[in-house]
Length: 120
Ligand SMILES: [Zn+2]
Image (cartoon, rainbow, N blue to C red; front, side, top):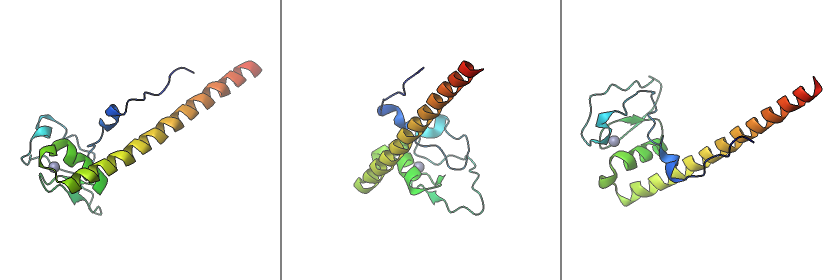
């Protein structure tokens, strides 16, 4: 084995506010509460949920909850905070499963190549 997956839970939220529309708006205005003039590229058949503080569109309620906590943390209500915790838990679970799958693929690849090398 070449590496073990990192186990830090605090760092799991690094990509938490990934915008749904694939823009690159995570710039210097990301901490501001005011509306920025970034254009969001929402597909015409999408039904985004908009942030009630800055109007930014998100693909799902979970992403919106993560964004609200990260950008508008001081203005959160209890309900929004618990929505964030729910979304955070869900995302941590997804991340954990992805790490396990990636590790399994690496192990299979490693031993597969080892067998090929031993046979050839
Ligand atoms: Zn917002």
